[in-house]
Length: 468
Image 1 (cartoon, one colour):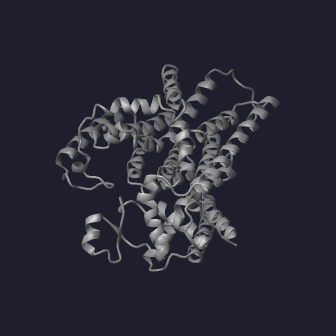
Image 2 (cartoon, one colour):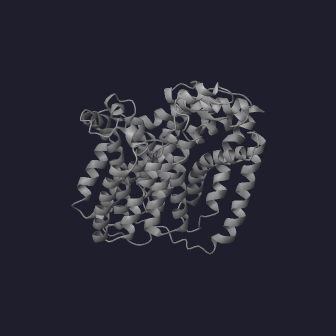
Image 3 (cartoon, helix red, strand yellow):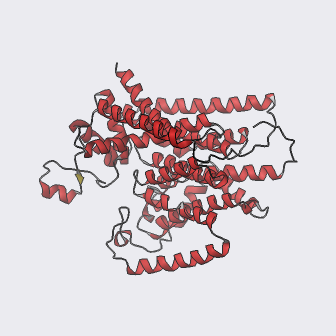
């Protein structure tokens, strides 16, 4: 009976998400089933905790049955409302694929690649099941809230240490980051409610489900962008075999993997909206950008990083230059005039201790180009950019928009670890890798698009009627 409840707890968020995505998606989408499965599962994993928060605000206890009923009603309502409105939205058509029919040898290679992905995910699942809750941040920042909320059946408040001492601990709790968003702990609460007990390993199953959903969403969006099957599957394998990403599944409990999946979902949807202007992609991009802010404080800045991409799509180069200069002047003015104690996404100017930390630069280079956290992804992406620039690949405006968005995110990452107190996290290799994980799936998507564009330039004009 326990495994039945656990299976339901893993399936129900995906079913909720599929209902929500299906309500806004159109039929003219390549790999629509995979898109529904990938994005639906991600949206369900992130949306179910928001339902639990609403139930708690309404004064209702956190229970498995009550949450499941609310999720079912939400999914049903989404299908009814979306079904009535979807027919009036423009859906566009999927991008054309010029690749011819696959040979027998290519099909064998694709099957082998798929089998390797499945074997890797299975191995990660066993690692997760065999190991109790272990990582530092998982036990100090996230599972503290999950265990308390599960045992009490309500979202008891968490406060700073000093405030907890002054309160006499009556009805309030504390941990290292009491102000972090509650989405990740509520996922663990959800699994515990299904089991009716706290299990150090099984509460981390959403991390495995999350990375599986990322793989499905990545492949589906690659195909929606017109990338050939072989290229899409090869880069999906590259993504799912990144060592540090896999470590965050096997050593589950951190929020970084979930934020990485959420941000990548927003980036991929933004790019395909730029290409095809499908309403579904715009809604998905906006939804996942908003959800980034509900996972970690850094999610606010990653959501903001999407704005340069929108500006590239809407403004001329001259307008972009003028806007960039105005933005730089505005930023300089804000840094000068804003109160030093003004909190934005959990940080203030005073707490950041803005200055240049020169010792962090070589540490970042080693983390990206020497250590094996990302295999050779940094070399691949840098090489593709150097080849793409002189060949005019970036004349494509949607690709420039994607590069602007991710360039903004990388710039924020560099500012964080070169210009603030968090440089110590780079110097001692304690945080720079985890934060880089937030961007790596999206950078893999960019690398795939650059590779595909360069590959097409070197191919002779193909005859019509080729299959994808």
